[in-house]
Length: 353
Length: 79
View 1 (cartoon, rainbow over the protein chains, first blue to last red):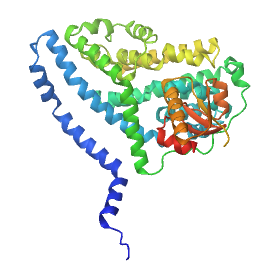
View 2: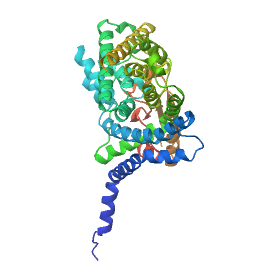
View 3: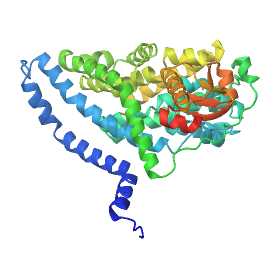
View 4: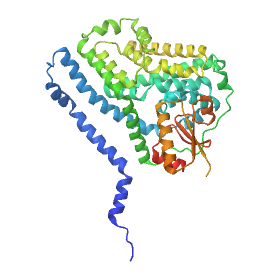
């Protein structure tokens, strides 16, 4: 008897092969459906609670109930797209592109690649050694290491979703400028001697062979879903905490209160925001809802963004990690140059907008 | 069968611990004779040519870098 390939099984195979695409489309449709009905849903939910919507507690709770699902949905969408973009980049590819590049162009390329290359601050040390060992100049390496946390993909996506493309684009451009400038300055003043000695004597390494990235569209979609599970699974407590703080500001801080503290007229507000932000550490997902609430209360955009950048880009845990490969002098220069850059960004934003 | 050295490269973050746990489970399920070595020294990690942790090497050969893998995938990498 001849075996005839049965139609259902080949259809099943095709269905299985296109599974990730189908799930992605279904997820997008469902997400959009819920997103459009969020104001009504949140209002209906708030109406069950014994708080008048115009009371302070009512305003805070209403803000929380609406913002949590909204920001979560937006975050999933942003992380999914970024996960797909990042699955096309790898540190090995980035390193090969940057090796031997000097001057401003190298810094610019490094800053741009810092945004799209997957990076986790726990890998900062092996990445730093790997870059230097392959002949990437110190300043260019630092441009990469500054851009990666500074232009955080979560922050970028949430700014885009909450405030529109103009502010997201400004954040991206200024973040890249700070990374480019800071790396360029450190490269120019020649601080190679301030890298820990053992790093410089590390033998040059080549990329580990035999590791391949995802192949095929479904694998890239899978990388997007994996990023959502990983990142959203990790940052949601920060997000809830951030929205809770934002809700508190929304309900209890009088309108225009922030105008006096963080407004455009108060010239000292930008340095204060940076000084407060550096020792603080939060996830970008936790800080954007706070920024949103601060802006609504009259904080100037530049001041709020400077605060956000210093919280996200410069943090004590990160400096402790970098201390393993950088001598204290370079750590100080690094912190100073990046903080100054953020300061300038804050003033520029406040002047322009 | 030769004893395999399963090497986990990473600073000791949560993902590295998970990777060690999954890798030993995968090795046990395959019935391998194995020993585990955790490499946390950044200079040694860089010496493997690895720029992203967590990473997994078997007898000095890097099999996985930059992300966590499930027991099924690890069985394939160890087998």
